[in-house]
Length: 197
Length: 89
Length: 241
Image: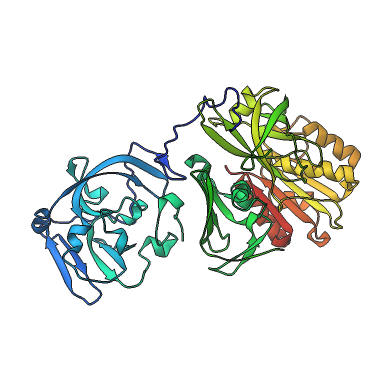
């Protein structure tokens, strides 16, 4: 039994067990980007999955909207240490999208309009762990937060949830995306503080 | 879990307590050789971001994460990163 | 009895050291003694089980079951205001330690020792000064202590005595305001200050630098510029600027 210290605890800051190590709670939604915000016309928008062999399956915005859409309530954790609990999104599950693809690849590189890339193990995009999300808190996703659609992989640090996502390229071997080449972790698990390379 | 503590970097001396939970001895005087850049330095000299739950211990020369030491559910965990070797000086 | 490394401890003395810092003496039954330069982790538990852990350097050294800590209050802090303002003799807390085997000094070496402290970085270095004085080695020690004002200097009187009687070569550096009659200039420690106040690299001193991270980085870089090999510079960073 720990020794109790008389009178201690009055100045505590809120401590939430849902926060991974090194994170603090925010009510805001900070915007961090590696470059300018791309403006994407919905008529031009495509989401594609390309296999190692070069085969590609893709969806237009209308085709995408016709897929099963899920509500997602989740916590998100940024490597810059802010966390936002209980955020709500709508999007298409990667499980749905990957049904159209045959591949024994182990990894995926997410590509975005504007050139951003980030790598994720394929089995961490399956089984209800990832979505292509286009609504946040009941509204269409704002361009500065990645709209029209972003990848949403909330169990990893949020830099893996690529904004302005345009597709995945499946790979046999893990390759570093943009931040992973610039000092950040290949995997990015917030619960073991996999922040840096 | 206080991010305000963690936002200021310190050094391996500050991780001695968390590391003691894993090894039950002081390891800060041991030399750590980085697998990324092969530079050797005392664990005490590494760059550390620390709060009550975890310490990220990085090579001072190349910034790769040598290891992360965590306290979770009452257990101490050391997750190895780029650490290649430990040498007793 | 140590449970998960945590040992019960009792505050036996609490004395103001500066307007923002306090010296605490803790009795730790079963304390194995500690080397000069080591630290402890302190754990505080509230009535509802909420806990906080912080590290503090030990200003004392050697055998015995009483240790001395100096706690500087961080404004808006969670633990330091409690230790500086609220804690009373008789209060209980938990201690893990002694910790640290790198930033320590033990008598017996032949090389001179250079100590450089910024603010509360003086605490582990004070343990070294005390150990050196008791070992008759004070004449081989030089201490450069950088503080904002003279009032902010922890251990100010004792350092004055050690410099006079024990032979430690003490140099003060004031960054914000100097005491009346001070002939030197104000400002941060820089290469010129170091050149004038520290053992020449030719003497091959072991150098210990302790204080806020920015201070330690700045001083360590300047020492290397002066010709001190980095292998002979030991550092302990306290965080903050």
